[in-house]
Amino acid sequence: MREAPVGVFDSGVGGLTVLKALAAELPHEHFVYLGDTARLPYGTKSPETVARYALQAAEALSEYGVKCLVIACNTASSVGLPAIRAHIRGVPIIGVIEPGAEAACATSKSGHIAVIATEGTVRGGAYQEAILRLRGRARVIAQPTQLFVALAEEGLHQGPIADSIARHYLDPLFHASAGSRSSLDPSSTPDTLVLGCTHFPMLAGAIRAAIGPAIEIVDSAATTAKCVRETLERESLTRLGSPASDDPKAATRFLATDSVERFARIGSRFLERRIDPEEVELVDL
Amino acid sequence: MREAPVGVFDSGVGGLTVLKALAAELPHEHFVYLGDTARLPYGTKSPETVARYALQAAEALSEYGVKCLVIACNTASSVGLPAIRAHIRGVPIIGVIEPGAEAACATSKSGHIAVIATEGTVRGGAYQEAILRLRGRARVIAQPTQLFVALAEEGLHQGPIADSIARHYLDPLFHASAGSRSSLDPSSTPDTLVLGCTHFPMLAGAIRAAIGPAIEIVDSAATTAKCVRETLERESLTRLGSPASDDPKAATRFLATDSVERFARIGSRFLERRIDPEEVELVDL
Image (cartoon, rainbow over all chains, first blue to last red):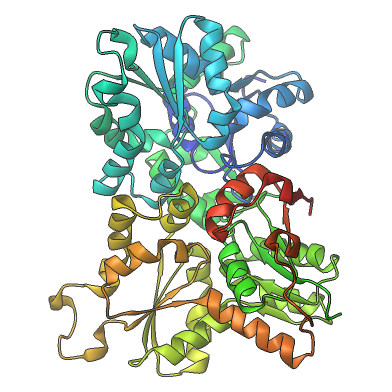
């Protein structure tokens, strides 16, 4: 079982930012990554539909003999995790919401936390609930920033367009006019921003420019990777021996439900290494 | 059969711009509109997947006894029309590509035509082929403008963000530096721009600001509506008598495969009249 791969699921290419963090945290491991590109985006779909799709994808991945399942999609984590945990037994199942919420609570001094995510993740309220479970007196404000997804996929994640869209979404959270807030209340502006979508680390530069240097940015990819490493260690599931391979291509298998060429082209940007279309297998759920 | 509704299919809410044009052109008719919101967007999916989805949707609509089927989605028209025409017999099936290409050819003086559309429509080449079939010496340049879709759905179709994205996509087509073109060739810049996606009429203001006043804009919604009217008249299928109803709600039935609330909320902007969530029926394909 120690030799088995770690399964990583996302609605598309966004989860490759999580895969990148996993590969850095766990250089000995093999991975199978499944992007449900035929049915993306999940972020605008109903909870019932997302849960159904996520469960199908998790079942498909478990047929590859994975020893651990990472739900790298925030939307799928927020609404699909209970169904996946109920149906798929015998392997640890880790979403991105809880590690992200933990990191936010550990990072925030004031307890005033902003979350940006897709429409579906914000509406589902999973981040808000997870943060409040950990820190009951936290104040959480959540804002859908749907265009960030399209910007990242179009390769327009930096430059004046990304900057102006980041300001459009973030100024109301961090730079509301003094008149609309109590200027005496030090917690009137969040001190921590959670990137609640796997696409958003691509826009870190534009986001940082919009919010200024003082706000802490929490990206759940790194925190999730750490949680996966701890889980594998606790369950004695870590792969032993030398790093999986000097060749990252040998250590990772890519599956996509559609548009293999697009997956490789756009995914290369997210993973920050070239993916050849030949590396991506087309699968049907 | 004259009393039967006209079926209109789109991947989501974009086709409501076509429905609006149809209702204006054919005030006596009833409509059934199906948005495949569970599986949108089609614009980034493979031709095989889009054709399969479009055929399923067309079959579902034909069960509502429609007398004519309008494929309002450019991507579905460009890759799904042959399959739909092969499988669904006995009713006229009208896409948006051919009417749009006809209008472009009739409008352009120089024969140099630009098309903006989704990635899938551009890659499929259907507009390019349809224009060249009608006007063999035309020069067609096609540009994917994927972000326009997200802008329209986010309600950011006007303002500085829409303006800067429109310039990003359109400046290279219409305002390339003189050095890169022959300044003596009057056809070196397109004189006509085809809006090859049903979302794009929402951005007409930003598009017009980016290209300037001299370029003709062709929107296939109006042309498709005219084509549907002519087809119904030719086949003796027009509904007789007085306008369908003074109440537009009674004349149109909305079906969506997911996210009824989102369909109503965003669709209201596209249709330019309020759609209540209660008006939208959830269907499973």
